[in-house]
Length: 336
Image (tube, rainbow, N blue to C red; front, side, top):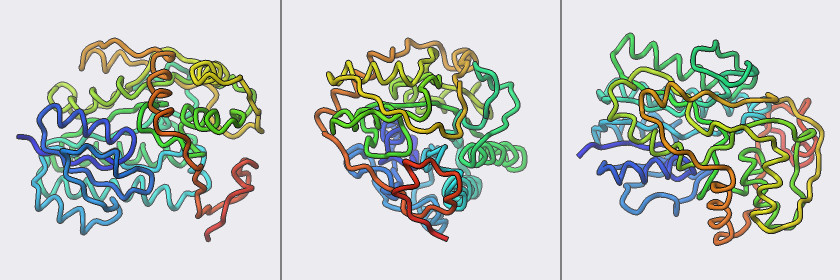
């Protein structure tokens, strides 16, 4: 029976990947510091270890104890816009923490390292974004993700560690933390709807994204290690059809059965149009039917209604206040 480590497995995407691996008859160890995830998200049949990817001594102990065949690294603080203002935190968690896992994977002879990157690595290149484009990330989060991708490439060349990199985008669905005010716009809108608050949109809402339901991402990530042709490659994965944020707000309002009530905030520094080409992933892993926005939002809404609203969390340790969006700055705390 293969043994897999899933970092961030108490979080949204990680818990779904862990669930898929258990269905594939892997023995699964979930490692999560619960900073953004929840203990109840961890599948019952998985072994849970509470800890941070920053703790390299803990990581080494886990690898020595379990002799993992595969590592699925999903632990990250994935707030692109906020990453400009928390650079030290971003690089420590998303880059240095990843390097701790890469080191252990080499030293304990892991068969394959699966890493969830992001389309944030591309920057504002013309959409649809393809893997052949030269990445020019426009935020600190994208820079950190690209650095880990490059680290995996040179580690493979130097030490022979096989890897697979996925660049998912705008993923939403059941078990997402809808109380996070800095990321995951579908969850933010649903939380606001439950609290009878207006849906807040930065700028005019014409930004375009291809919103991706979790069922179109987690199974591909989990099963990727069974496809030899996927080794040592980078893949975009996600929905094909872009929608504006205004369109998304309308779908959420209809699904949640609330009046469409939008509050437009000052624009923030973000890529205007971003969606991906997925032909490479379909060639290697096979084409699959994808979830429409209406279907995915309906499935998530049913889960959200059962679990209720969450209190929006405030990031405590902002490092730079200059040029922060006013709606964030008024509740921010500075840490220097």
